[in-house]
Image 1: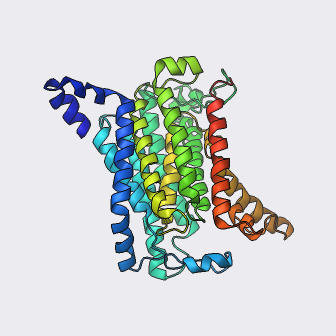
Image 2: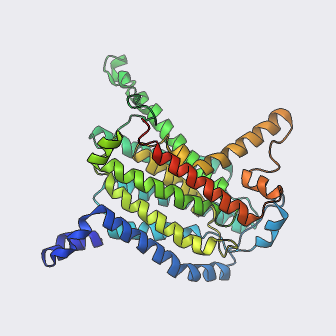
Image 3: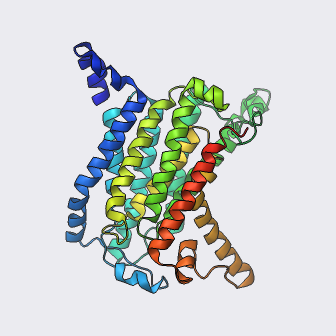
Length: 381
């Protein structure tokens, strides 16, 4: 909105405003606006959630130290979502389709998390939506994003190829073009051509959403790692939209994706603002409305900029947390034994005697190492 006001109205009267045409400038302002909104409205939201008695329920089998956190206001992810969406609407070019796909994912996954959190509050226990219902809704939102990207691909505005780090020319197409030929049973098989692409998109986005959700177990852990991952994706998004940088780094150049950098910047700013109140000892928890939306959004950004594989490194901590749960459940079902004292793995280190703050900071350090490694792969091709 401000972009249109400056670009189409005020610029003709005051030429120095031309600086707002640059994506980097608007990204900085979007980030600052998002952080300002989160910092200003954070205290009000904490008080309001407390008045409504929307508090966190702690599972009985968790570490004993967590029992004192019961009743802390939750569903604070609403603050992150709104503090990301509003600056994006203010500073981004709203004619850009990638912006609307990212906003749809942010709000779609937030809605799923909101319903889940509300169910927990209503039942007064740490159980919300069933796993099947939650997964179905996540897949549905992911498929809508996938269909949107397919529509853009038909106009050569996006790609259906899969990019692998370290390999310059290995970029398989996830659309089976042989099924698009009319020779195949009169062309009746054409819907099957898009199945691999849509399935892959759903796996990446849903996996990312649930991985962040599993990481959200300690004060500031998930949001701190999100700041780092979103920061790395901001850089990746910008270089993917810049022809010279994309050519130099030998990555896919995606015209029009530059506006998504503004969304990424807003996400970083909103996350930093929320971290102010979520830092140990937390005054508010993000709840599923925050963790599901953040994870899903990170996945959508990676899909749009064709860095799905690199997302495993950008969000390395999230991947480790998810793997620890998968290994723990698999080991217990197959052998009747546990690998870790408790999963997700951050609880394992707590039970080993690490203080909560030490686990959080060390995981942030590892997350930063993963993100920096992901950025270095841009030249290792």
